[in-house]
Image (cartoon, rainbow, N blue to C red; front, side):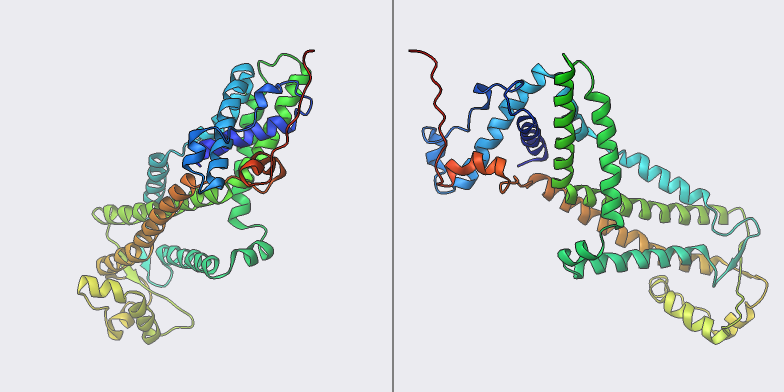
Length: 351
């Protein structure tokens, strides 16, 4: 089941449940899914669950088409699915933001122990720790102990956007107050159900965007650092109340080990580090190279990989949406395919 099919099924469910007297969806329009005499049912008799789901989807598509023709305001339910994130604009804004945010400042002095890229690295380390925690801890435990967080924020933002769109589109071209009330109630119920069923999809999409933005921001910072380096002279130094030259050398050696190996350039020794103490005085080119390579290794590459993984997961979730078949509404529709009989209502119309 695709996301569009799920939206149609949930819209029909909401409209039917809020129209118990058959005022807007007539009785004949609510014909149950075909079964028994359809050759496709015999072809897939080995999997009755799949057959029943297919019939429910066909029924929802048929009824939703009639509903949108008779009540154009209901088309707003599908307009919500057309929300597109301008990925190129997001990447561009993040790169420009990183480029404009000068991490060194007009003085051109780099403090090796208080460099803004170090803060960026620490922030990403915290983000990676959170992802690892969410991966290791079972979902049920997370849901009980952390009702808020990013999933709650994503749901709140998306729900506000959906309500705004539905309120804007769902109030026009109705024929009377009763129909307007039915449409408004149905759309509100539909929005809540859709948000509940696509929660994982929305959260995965939000995570992919955050990963892309973080990688683009780091690229912008590095690009700005190098471009400014052609026009300004950057000098490096360090100051510390609690650390001496040996401690600073140990810290920088550990931090820049991968960059030093890739650049085939060793980190300056303790004597060179001691000479940098106080006012920045030495050319900072080697330290800029170290910071740039470290940022690429620990921010750009992991974030890109995580974004690609999130996109793949999002595509999988969008293609395998599940029908909420345990709800009473769907149990009634699926019972004939589950061997639980079929309720038949006989209406006398002539004699």
